[in-house]
Image 1: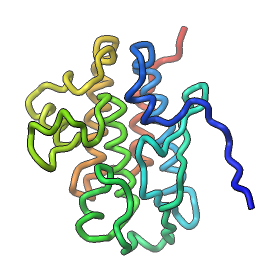
Image 2 (image 1 turned 90 degrees about the vertical axis):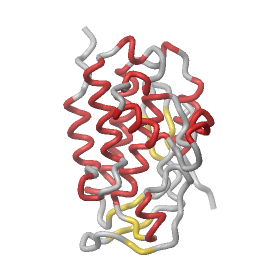
Image 3 (image 1 turned 180 degrees about the vertical axis):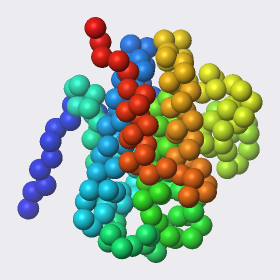
Image 4 (image 1 turned 120 degrees about the vertical axis):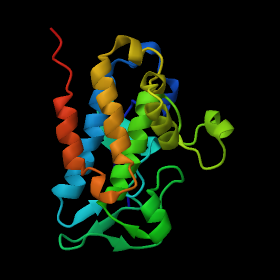
Length: 212
């Protein structure tokens, strides 16, 4: 028995985020990767029958090709959800720092759990920080990238979220809108958390203009 995969020479998104050089932090690239992931999740949630919940969205499970096209990988924890089902009750699986709080607390998983994980990944992509970055230790236990980003937004310090070079090259209004979108994906109130289809729609509205 063999499993055959496409070879994706760009490595995974975790390596890209934490090892990228300044030439790789342009908004056009960040936006493309974020949109690729969002479209893949929207396909799983809205187009597949039965629907597919990935349950382990994190940078190391997102692979890149030479053109920085992003692909979801590692469906070992995926769960199928019938059209009539709003959630499934199951043991909690996933990676600490990316698991939605309602899933961890109740063992009830829905497509909104993948949305939460996506929001965490999007924050990492914008900031260059890890979901449980060592720099958060001074804030106390339980402080993660979501808490950190929300704190900076509340204090009007949104620019401090972005990786050096990204904020300087802009466009700043679109960057802030993207930050707010990422935070909305991680909001605890499920009814306020967008679907991946809504995330795709908003990201397309923030699409950078084509290169002249």
